[in-house]
Image (spheres, rainbow, N blue to C red):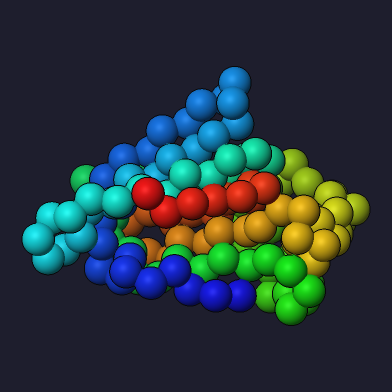
Length: 131
């Protein structure tokens, strides 16, 4: 797991989802100076964003990928990503285990946006880049 630097106290200002190309873009504006940057996810497998409101302040953004990740590190994030706000789950233990296996093999990564206020997000994708 590693944290993406430069996002603490930035505001998530926009979300763009392209289902045809399986691309998700999260747009941010820094607290100081109003600089803008984005994270583009390609090969998106699944994602969930909750509580996107008029102010979405980021505490941190973590990327989970590769052999260092254990089921304990990511299991609850995957389960949350595969659950609707009414508590309905659309996953099974096998699906969660499959995500963990793919993360450990670096076939996908898991991005977790922890908010100070506003939007929580978890994204499972093949790759990402900061723009």
